[in-house]
Length: 69
Image (tube, rainbow, N blue to C red; front, side):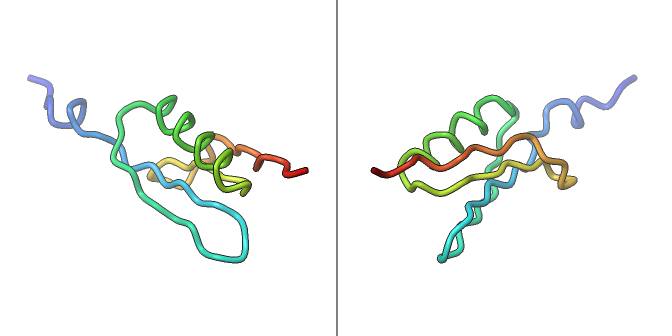
């Protein structure tokens, strides 16, 4: 019988932002698309480039910061 615990576990996804101050958070999500939407919202609100990585450190996406005029 297959162990369901591996499929039911959420993944740790790391969201980091570039800039002078440190921004790093680990979110416990099962949906990579949701993590990317959260990263986009952070990038839009802070103006920082935000990267998203999975628990192994593989890059899932990088969202450029919003340009301020």
